[in-house]
Image 1 (tube, chains in turn purple, yellow):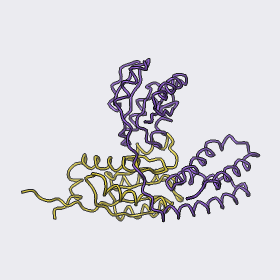
Image 2 (image 1 turned 90 degrees about the vertical axis):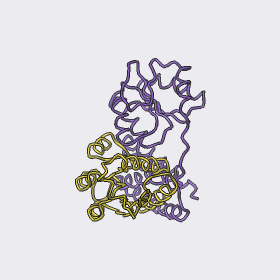
Image 3 (image 1 turned 135 degrees about the vertical axis):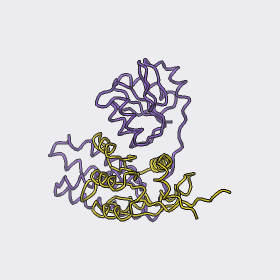
Image 4 (image 1 turned 120 degrees about the horizontal axis):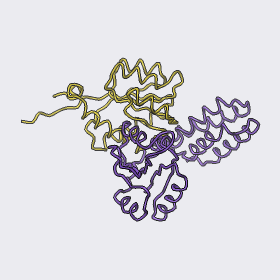
Length: 204
Length: 152
């Protein structure tokens, strides 16, 4: 069962992660409400635990946004105060006491994943298209045309995982998140490394 | 005596510049509509690969549901969302994006989007949207739903 733990106190998040993982939960962390909303819309967690007072976007606003967008999976509030917001499935009192937390978490079960139907013909067609994109990326890296390069990387991030190329999506995501902080003189080297990794992925 | 109700074909518009994504969505919507216990099962699909063809198709078909990519080659899906909702306020629009930013999510909500999917597509995300669509149409005023339910 996987959980998203949204909490701005990094130490508390680390402690929760250690305890929950001991009991077999897979824990992902978000450091504020904004990240929690983005994560919840990107991945289907079995359960979200949401702190109320968080920077950027607080837990109440975050759960309201998710519920407005039809998010119907359980979200638990964590707070020292009373929480009356109807979007939460449950409220856990802070400070969290592990035996109590464990007891409450036991009410929730892992939600079976729905497999995406991917006909072989469509998968093969996309994978051939991905090969063409790698070739285009090679040329764009050579020209150091980073705007077009990153547009294609963005496309790969958003689509490759749906066509049995999850690693390519993950590599593209990693490159996108690092890109702004890479010094100009190192961009070509990093781009080539990304391409080498993509090409090494075994296409089915 | 009970009257049998036949559900009229609902129109679904898929807007994405990548043909593979539209095909994938269509395959999975078809599969999930027929497999899951959903109230609304009959549908017909329309597709658009950019903002201008999406706007034209929307105006002609006035679909009940739209999957709308935010990043289109000739415009933003967020702008299209506003135009769609002006033309058909009860249309169920699912925003689709390769990346979610707080600003995009807020703008989508303020402009009347019903849901938001961050790509890549998964079976869970698509099914969650379809279940939401069923609930949404149940809550609409009767006169909005009646055109969908035709007596044979």
